[in-house]
Image (cartoon, rainbow, N blue to C red):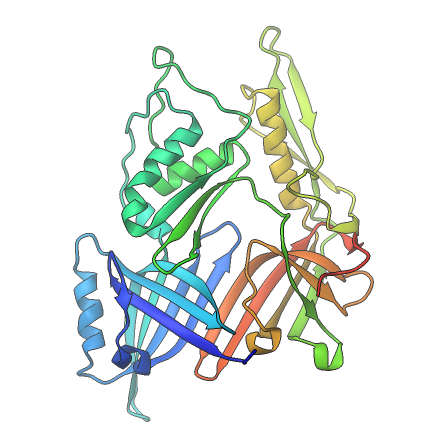
Length: 375
């Protein structure tokens, strides 16, 4: 296996095309940020001259209708391709260093959720559609951008009868989809890939199980692959969520409390902090007991992430790209902090001859629940 990294770039309106060699030669750095449940972003920096065709390209994109200049960034590490982002340009600016006579064009953008947030179609009727059907319908129009939906049905499927009520869209497609996800304790995000020009639109529960990425190692001499690492432990962050619902006949308020452990969110730490506060959920009086329990569990899971870690690594030394929204092992940090973590965020920083990643990890407690970690 050879230590090799190859950057690939596609740019163009709607359907991106492979960047020309002139554009690749002008590219100086790439930064891509991915977060577990929020919008991902990117920044490309080009070294240009005043007559560069790159300025014309992005100026034309700024005046297109709709203003969609698509950008796809992928890296191939040791023969394995990883699509880092599939998004659109949102801004660009040009800066000149007078002393050195160099002009830099910086292109800034977000993932394709930005396109979903362009047009407000509030009031669109969605008759006889549960939340899952509404999400599927709203995502259909983005198939032209290579977006394929992955929708996990909830246990709260409710098909409204048109004679009783007709659901209507509230806000843009993105806002409406995320509102529906929040109502059942789900998340929504776009996962680029697996091939350039395609993305998976995931609407479902936040999953913290599955394959484990190769372990991050510190204080392991030649086997160390982490350049910097620090930990935080917030024992006062954990809260006990309480949801009050109403008994339909007597209107008696009934409190519902649940734990933060589920089959999709198993404990990664053996010693968990004790809840130090109570979180009351408002506006839940008309919810069913099942819906209230799911919402409370999702919020309890978020507040339970008391242990956090952040650091950086060299991708060549690690041997692969560390991915967000999945598990990774950590060894060499001591009894309290070794074990499995959920990768909540990754920032890719690529320059010529250098590829580093900054990462953020989290879990629910101290001390690993596993006896050993995957290599």
